[in-house]
Image (cartoon, rainbow, N blue to C red; front, top):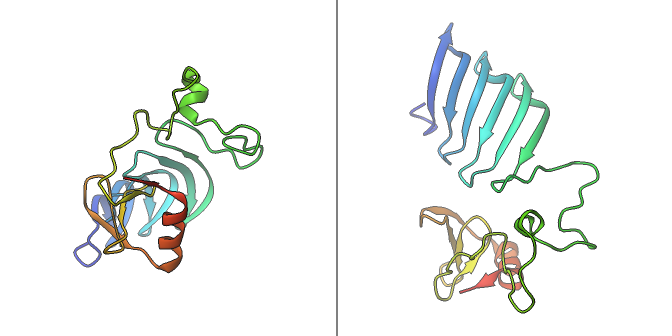
Length: 161
């Protein structure tokens, strides 16, 4: 896995990844599950660095069916998705734990919200510095450079420190 920056823990058959395994991508996303002929195959779970996960059944590297769970435990429903729609704008933690008293606002699903560095924006997966147009995760590791569309969206939409 030297070439890709990934790490693999599991068996090999005829030089191909096979059986129960763990596969860690350079992004720190981790797959745990079944492998066949070097591909995700059978039941397996992707664990994302933000704490969310995707449990799925795979066939030759392709998803057959799966369920996504956000880091806070909210399960995504493909049909009848009623979270944060036009009728109910509460955060998931407010649904689970109730609303705060009048006059006390909850600004994010995380309460208290993260402290945003001065001049930066919280874009959901990290902090964005518009001076250098770089997004770093919450541990200050480089994630990506923002293109013009993402830059405009962040400036228009996200909370600023």
